[in-house]
Each structure stands twice: as C-alpha cells, then as structure tokens.
Length: 122
Image (cartoon, rainbow, N blue to C red; front, top):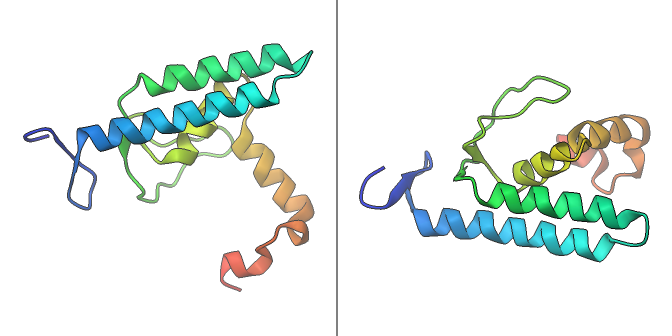
C-alpha cells in the first residue's frame, strides 16, 4: 500500500472507495435483514444484521479475481472479496452456507434459473 491506495490487481484503488463499498454492502445487508424480520424471524434478522455489521469493520480489498476454493464451506482469503463474498460470510456467521444452498438448488432446478445454460456459455 502506498499513499492511501490499495493494490487490487488492476491498479491502485483509494482506501476510501474500498471502505465505502464494504460499508454500503453491510448497510444493505442490515436493511435487508430488518425488512425480513417478522415475529419468529426477528432473532434471525437481528443475528444476520449483526454479522453483516461486524463484517463492515474488517478491511477487505475488492478483488474480483477467480480463486479455486473448497466445497462446501470454501472461502477466499478473508481480506479479499467482492460484495457476494461479504453476503456469503454474513450468512455463514449465522449458520447458513448460502453458497452451498444456491449450488444445491441450481443442481436440482437448473431449468428454473433465468439464465439457464446461457450462463454457462452453452
């Protein structure tokens, strides 16, 4: 890191932009959790919101590079990621592996996903 810039692999990105991106993601998760909170789901929404807020306190460098990861529960380095990595981590903090859930659902119901085979370039 030099002069307040973070190396993202594609050139330097101002630290304030990385912090802003992570903060905005966390706030979005918080608002989503609050919106979903109803009766018995209040506790879950609160826990998810707390996990998202915790993640906004960590410094994460925006890194869209591809990483081969373990499955299930694989993750890229904790100081790297994009918005979806932050969301996956927040759900894992409350005991849900959203990455695994989506993968398994796509395997069972692939034809129901809007992009279908076009997403895979087929």
